[in-house]
Image (cartoon, rainbow, N blue to C red; front, side, top):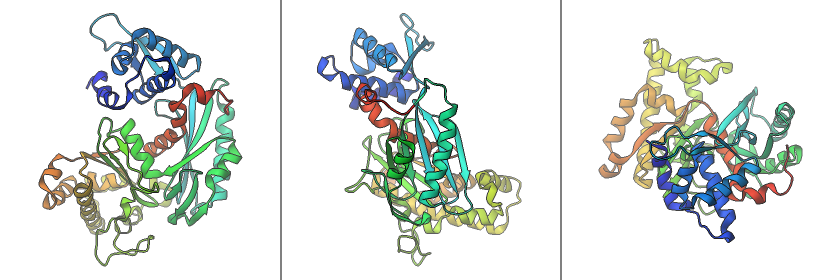
Length: 412
């Protein structure tokens, strides 16, 4: 797919610019948003995508260069007709701090414009960390990161991805049951400690944003991202190109779909929820993986299956979890009618271990027309999608109003 094809649908839908001076903020936002999401785009493509004339694009790009948000680089080598056009790329010196705590690790990373993860740190914990411990860990890691950055780099904010329910207004954690957090002002504590603006959201929701912007769900208008981690299973839903938030911002609790009557008790108080029946912990125990090697869980499971060394209990567990996952996926397909479902975290294992079993289970039930149109894709291995999505929270106000956001001083 050409770069022009990749930007055509979302640009036509939402990002057309205008030549009126009164909408310069909108035009700057449109151009920076395209450069950011594409990871680089030519001036000629910006002109075609936005409907703005070449001189206006040149002026807007020049202003973004002055702000240190984009760079003008080599000529576009993909252009086949006419004069080569200068490429515009996101500046690697503009960064967001991304934080994702979980029951056994606190992930911290800097992410540059364009969605590139820089020097990620996984701080392992022997138990679920407290809010105070998370603040101390992040503060220490951030201090080391900040002091090692060259002077021209700047960190514009912190994006916080939480495995639980979050108040997006103040970044407080309403409830993260696996972490035993309830009504915790984590956003405010981090902001006070780091002197950065903090924005928070559910981890699977920000993962969905990352997949829609940079990953398998790019250019997909109707997408469901289902993520399995140490704290359970969460989801993010994009419908008609927009993230579904719900009346109070808590939409996407897909881990609490009912998949088994009389099943295990869930942290939500119900029984037989997807995240109570399909767990990473069960896979870790079945494969006999030491706690310090959990990052290698997927490789360890698939290697045992390839070598025929998988125990009967492991094979049965994978089959059972895949079947229950299929029950949840059928519900998603029938209720939401997405064109793509992206599986992340340990849910990748269930698909890779038995793709035919999962597809067969999906074919067994469901509405024919809806089922035949949905594609199952896998998110990249690792936590990058969550961290990139968390960074998007911090970048959002910058991209919405580049000049206005940078007018006051920001942490450097």
